[in-house]
Image 1 (cartoon, rainbow, N blue to C red):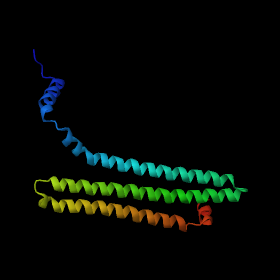
Image 2 (tube, helix red, strand yellow; image 1 turned 180 degrees about the vertical axis):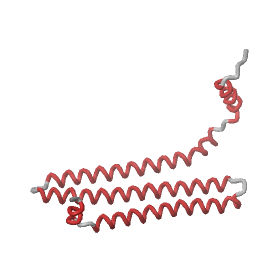
Image 3 (cartoon, rainbow, N blue to C red; image 1 turned 90 degrees about the vertical axis):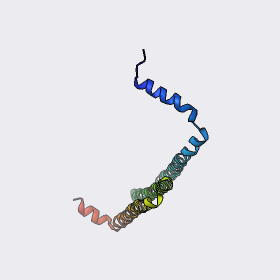
Image 4 (cartoon, helix red, strand yellow; image 1 turned 30 degrees about the vertical axis):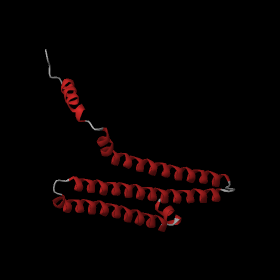
Length: 160
């Protein structure tokens, strides 16, 4: 006796669709996703290498510190470099995200049945993503300038 279970329904759909499967078309469809993943992997690998190099530089510098003040200066420089690297990495990740978002919107527009009707929506979506990217960049720059303007004596007075 035939029972229509979810497994049987999936199996039937797969067997009926098997003849329509086109490996070349599937590969072409998945290529943008593969390219996006590769871009993220490359970005992560580059950022990890930069972080490792900065850490090794800090370790080497601290080994050469002769007194507590010198060690403090090494840690201070390391913290500043770390914040700069964090800001750069965040900007790079945001730029990659926004670029990929723009590419996705372009692909949707290209595949849309009425691309001219979708064009206004696409432009607004891409403008919104670019505005978010610019806002983040401005916030990072403002935060960096505020942090740089704080003097050690002001920090000590505020902590009491």
